[in-house]
Image (cartoon, rainbow, N blue to C red):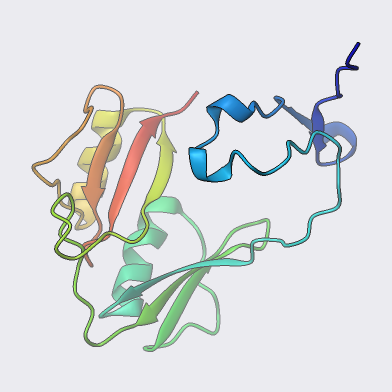
Length: 163
């Protein structure tokens, strides 16, 4: 008889969260060969930053600062600007003078990555972000469930209802 493994515990003390067990059949095929890790192990890595290439780091940082309320990192300059979360994650914007915006959903210039944000109200959030300079691409795979927008540098990002 197989013993059930306890769920992974993330965090400590009053803020501990229990993650549901990983189910191999729900993983993408490329990862099914990896063992299910149900035991709590110390992390090997800790995410420190997410950085986007763009033609104007201060301008893109200003867009996301207004959208997220995160403070501008004090070392931000024309070549690299960043926002910091309370947990210490840096959301960075790196100068790429020859930046070509993704052409999503057309794969001619791949999106490479996209960001997802939870919002209380899809319509209100979309309207506020459009006022800040975001645009709405024609392709909207499931606009009742989530919305795809493009930041001022052309990076796709999604808005999903919180909860």
